[in-house]
Amino acid sequence: MEKLVVSGACPKLKPVGVSFGQATIRILGRQFVETFPVLSTNASFKLLNRDLGRSLSQVADAADVKRESAYYLANIVKVKSIDDFLKNDRLYNFAMQAFGMKDMIYAKAFVRKVLTDGIDNSKSFANQLADPRFRELAETFNFARYGGTTTVFDRTQQGTVDRFLRARLEERAGQDNEGVRLALYFQRKAPEIDSALGILADPALLRVAQIALGIPASGANIDKQAESIARKLDVESLKDPAKLAKFLDRFTSLWEASSGGNTESAPRILLTQPLEFSIGPETLMKLQSWRMGGQR
Image (cartoon, rainbow, N blue to C red; front, side, top):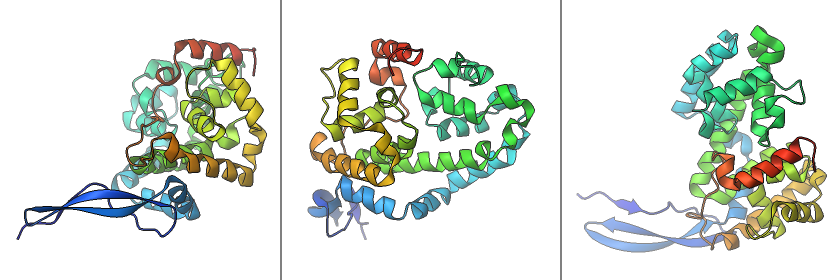
């Protein structure tokens, strides 16, 4: 007997906040096109957030995640120096993914410089970079300050595993709906945003802000985009969970319109994409000048 073959997205049944997709079903040599409901970005995001702990537990229970997390926790405490950290590819790769820097795994010399300088000096390498991920990495793996005791802290152990789980959850959400992934990412990063620079320096945060605030994705220089963000958004309000939820509700409601109404194949903002490919070298130079004492 011929097997049932289904091509296309799996049905996602929910009575509210749905659009409709199609799947081609092949039975006994014949093809049938079936229409089924698909959750909207807004509904999907709310559903995922309703029980975020359970969603993270499901990610943690995946065989590959469980294996890599166990290895990391068992071995990171043995790391006593930057050399130890960089030489163990398995630990290093896990940490880089946890901090959303899968794209930078190859750049060990760059990461070495970030970790060697640390963050205590305002002129350190990490503090001069526009991309805040490097400062977060240097703060967690602060060998410059703590030396051989760096990995005894919870932030380098379970804290990094928790970051890895959240990053993996966002990645998997993006396989179904990039708008949900962007919303989850913004939700996680929002408490750390302290200025328009923090949004402009991150292509994913910027994309969310552009859609939610109605700022064109192109055609405006960085100064005008910064002015638009500052005028339309009180960055401090993002630290209020209720106001952040309202902001993300607006973004997820507008996502379909911005992506042509296709939640499954909308153009993706790769959260692990190198920053310079998303913003461009001229913009990066501008951001760097702001970071080093110019406009904030």
